[in-house]
Image (cartoon, rainbow, N blue to C red; front, side):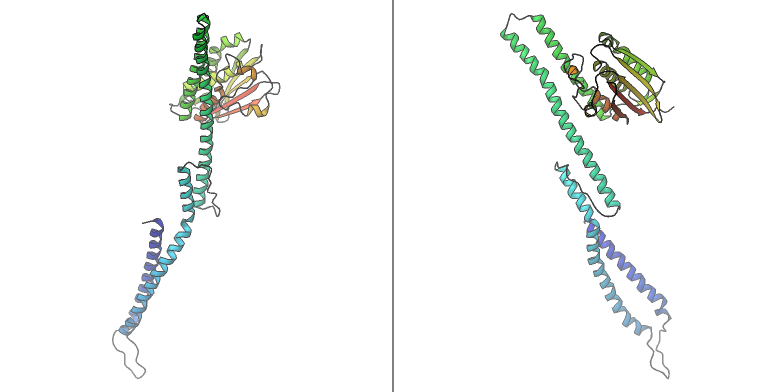
Length: 355
């Protein structure tokens, strides 16, 4: 049976029970006081209990039949009106299952349970639509980025085949460089996918040690680019994956070094506690960035400057996208802000580890 039919039968059954109870009350509190035998006297004849039963019972049965019909008809109409929002939610669910995520229920009326369900469903559809659009855009960008090194490799091999006298060492060096970039891109995509799936164990991680480790690892790159890297702050522990948080700090420091001034500059890494969150702040000098550009830096395959796009150490354009994904996978937050005198300030807030 459908829910509407069940509700209709429930309404009708409730009316029948209420009517039967009312008749029982009439019987108990009225008819039992009427004498059973024939009453005779000088006055008119008084009806006894049998007379009242013969007059009352048929009408009581008809009243119950009328209540049954009224309960079925009224219950069917009332159930239909009550379940109308549910039908709209069902239609939206079918559209979503068919692939249409742009439809919204937009249920009007009072803030009852159906309105709450519809609003929650609309919010879910909005998040799904944004996630699907992001995944499609990311897949298109990833396929483009992966196709580029493959196309370069094929071109180099075709040129080498047509020119047997070409320097083999130069060809091998170019192929190695292109292959390394493709491997870096693949590994970055795997890290990003792992972070989005949240397939990791959580444990206390000292952010100050993670920041120092990232700075020491990238010290040769910083020295080669004449960039000064300094770490400071308090010891603070975040709850998360040591490997992913190490990747987060490494990406931030690497991004700060690469997107620094062409010669010189500085990178400052600070850890500490801000309220109920562990905080990692990475600031670097560099070119002045517009607010519009800053708002897009965490998108996949976005690079901050034209110089970085041709830099051999610039990565694959997934550094801040991975940082954002790791932060959100840890129930944290990534905040970007351009510095007034040039450069970028990146702040990552993460849940504190229990003491």
